[in-house]
Image 1 (cartoon, rainbow, N blue to C red):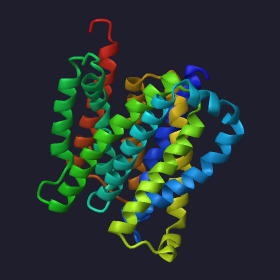
Image 2 (image 1 turned 180 degrees about the horizontal axis):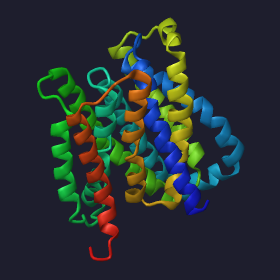
Image 3 (image 1 turned 180 degrees about the vertical axis):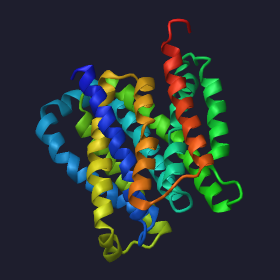
Image 4 (image 1 turned 90 degrees about the vertical axis):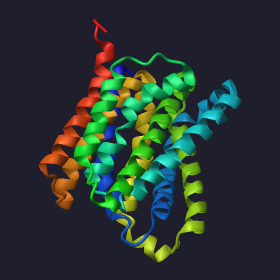
Length: 295
């Protein structure tokens, strides 16, 4: 796969993730976040597995045998980070709006190099620190500190961004070693489905008839976001490093905000817009500055 095709995969992934916020928000009218997550990822698994077996069946055993310990280590790490990232994000939509959820999610972009430093001792570029400061100022403008519910939702999304950062890092490391992105996306979806279902039975009321009432949202979030987008992400990161990939993924907030405005009439005030712009500038600056020759 060429780098141009990988960039296209990343852009399509970002568009799907952004517009999927609509499905995630409207899909919880009758079911809880864990139940929605379980339904979403089982649909994703069913979507991706046949494609994986068709295109990668001959490579699966070979790739797993390259380093079984590392293979299952990354499968575990990616699945856990994806589970917590999606659960926290899904829950946040019960308290905050789509724009806040989407833009606070992209906090993972400046977090990626910091976590890379903590785990892999990768050098942190100076641009990360002003970027984080801009993000904090953006939070001030975007969030509503007088509304405790919105603050809870925004806090959950900021926490979820840590897990998204971990997921992007582990996906990049996995693709450096293995070459079965579709099959891996299917396994990941299956594990997130299992974890979500277990906790849904413990913490929520799981009723099939109620799940079926949300079929359109589940299908969109499952087939496109839970299945196709996470598969395209693996292809994208075959030829794109973690940090540049994170820049493209940051457009998720833009797509989500536009979709929320057009479909759900969630209009932003001037302070919200300033907050969104500051966070977007911070995210892009944190990734462009390190590529400058003068830096």
